[in-house]
Length: 25
Image (tube, rainbow, N blue to C red; front, side, top):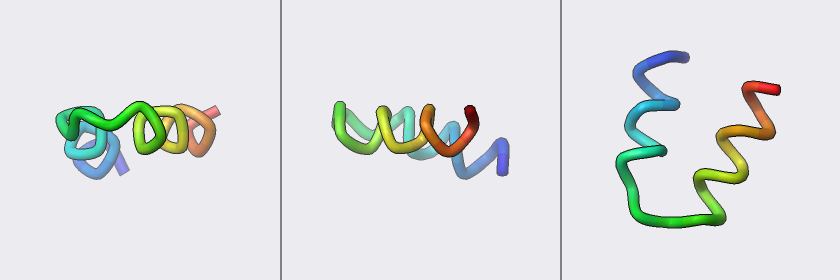
């Protein structure tokens, strides 16, 4: 899950970043 989150954060997309943060929280 950590590697997935890091990969998503690496992608320059606010929607993906928000979705990742929501999934973690």
